[in-house]
Every structure is written in structure tokens, then in C-alpha cells.
Image 1: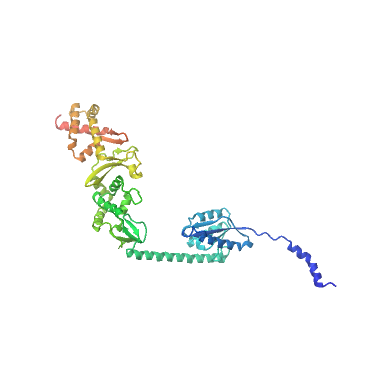
Image 2: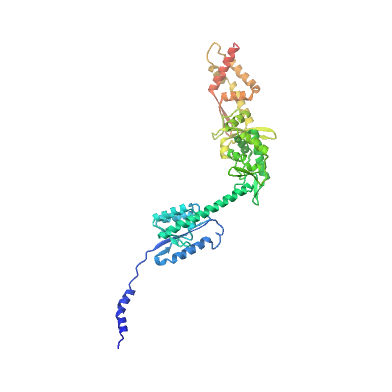
Length: 457
């Protein structure tokens, strides 16, 4: 006797087996990339750090969706020690290139702020992902941009993240302002002359001497340009060994830290640190700084004589500028190549020469030239023919008289004559070359003619 149930089971066995043996539909593969970030580098040297923990959690999130075709690609995108306030991060930029190339279809992060702390930047990235058909998923916030709910939640949560960041920044700014009003050092670039010990500015005596010297010598010269040239000629440098230029000097001379003030947003408060210079010296220096740079430059040029200003050049073709230093009350004058002032020592084979030596050499050379017969003849020919035209002998005597009276002339008159007669002085490692002005000889000849006319030559 056959049981009906068994018969029915046997009858249905064939179709049931055929359905089980039918191959399942293929699930399309979705390539997923994991992005991780840490704001600072603390702990990144450990065997298992924060980036690894973020990666493992995201990898498990992807494995839980294998039935949907999610597959983790082998590349890792880790940004360690990178701030979330900027998108200029190496691994993030590499991820964006792979997204553009179609290698990634889903970007997975541990938390949304790992991508960016700025709502605007985050939404821009999501829109860029969307333009390439790439979705975004956050593990801890449990949302995906593939759904409308996920997109709305991402905007809301990033808005709160940005609000928290702005509130934190505001609290920090208020704390800094309150601390500065109490004169507390709150970090930043440590001024020359100080060092930081236990978060306080302490006077560094060796550097403080340089600061005092800068203020005192600027008070005498009245020119930051001149003082910078003197410092460079003397080898005085910044804390990092760089030459002191005009810009550095202006910042130093205007830094109220040196009179014991703490500055915050343009307001001065009494600082906890000791001053390096006196208030009286500060006031005298700033009374000079209040003058226009043109006025101070003209005053400085008037105090320092330089016979060869503007006409002396080094081997590189760069002009050589007059400068001077003061040691033990005595002034030492130099001509320094502009190549050295701009590029440092070694930029010119003849970087600096003694002004007294080179000026004496040029004057001696000029005296020899003016006594040369061909120069006497050329000067005589330059005089305009007239009834009072001097003879060649008169010209020779006038030039010899100029040679004799040279040392009795005032420096300004000596400089005027040199600038009149000399067109250019070129220096090299072997000597110098003096080029005369033809029109200068004409001017000298005209003065001789007038003198002879007045004396009835």
C-alpha cells in the first residue's frame, strides 16, 4: 500500500531538484576604497595605530555587504598627520584621481569628518563623487549617499561638526586674547634676543646685544639700508645664520616686544618678559622712522662722502655701493658689490673694497692721465676757438694746478670733479680700468677758457 504523501513527494522531486541545480544570478562587483586620516602624527609609529583601526572597521563594513557585490580594492589611502581643514592631502588627492579613472565605485570612511571638517568642502567632494557615479558611506554614522535619507543626514551632521569646530576656534581665540592682555607669551616666532623657557620669554644675552646694537647704530646712521650693508660687511647674521637685510631690520625696529610689550591685534599690553631696550631709545629711533624714507636717504647720503658713487662696478657688472662701519669711534668706508648684498658672500670675486684705497688709486690714476700730453692736447682742442682761447701751455698749467690744489678742495668739490671727469671704474681681480668722460674734458676746457678770459690770458 502506497501512502499518498509519499507518492506526491516522489512526483514533485524532479521539478524541485531542477530548480536547485539552476545556477544563481551573478551579482555585479562594486569596488570599494577605504580612506583614513589622523590630524597629528602621535602614535603613527606604533605597530597598530589609529589609521589601522579605522581601516579594519571599514573593511569589516565592506565584508558585511559582500552579498551586494562590495569588494575591497588592495590600495590603501592613509593620510597621517594631515589636518581636515584642507583638501591638499597626498592620499586624498590620489583617491580622487582613482575615482576619476573609474577604479573606485564606493568610498568608505570611519567617520565623515575624516574626509573634511568643512561642510562646504564635504558637499563639494560628495558632488564630485556623484559626478563620477561614486557613492559615499560612513561606518559610524550609518548612512550612505545612495539614499535620500543618507544625503540629508550627512548634510545635517556635517553642519553640526562645522559648528563645533567654529565654537572651538572661538574659545581658543578668546583664551589667547585674555592671555595676551595679561602679558603672557602665547607662542609664535620667537624674536631675536629672546628664548622660550617654560613657555616664557627669557632674554638671550648674546642675541640681545645684536638687538641693542641695531637700535643704537640706526640712531646714528638713520638708514636701514646703510645699516644692513654694514651688518652684511661685518658678518652679522640672524639666528639662522642668514644675512640681515633691510626688511629684517624694519621688523626688528618696529617690534614692541623689545620694550616689554605684548601685542594683540594692534593693541599693546604690558608683558611678563623683560625689555631689551629702553623706552627713551625706542622713542628716539621712532622719531627718525616717522620721517619719509626719501628724506632719511638724502640725509644719510649727505653725511657720507663717496667719490665713486654710481660709477664703480665689480667683475660681474653689478654696481658697488658705498657703505661704512664704525669701530671704536672710527669710521671705515667700503664699496660693496650689489651681487654680494643680494646673493651673499661668494657672489662676486671682488665683493668688497676699501673706499679710501680705491678712491686714492682712482685719483692717482686720474692725475697721471691729466698730465698725459694727448689729454692736454685733447683738452686744448675742446676749447672753443675765440680771441681768448688759451694756449696749449695754459691748458697744461691749469691741469697741473688742479693736480696741486686737489688736496685742498672740499670733499663735495672733489666728488663733483671726479663725477665730471670719470665715466666708469671697472674692478676685477687683477686691477681696475678708468674710463674718462669726453664731455667732462670739454667742461674742464671751458672752465679754463673762462678763467683765462677773466685773467686776460
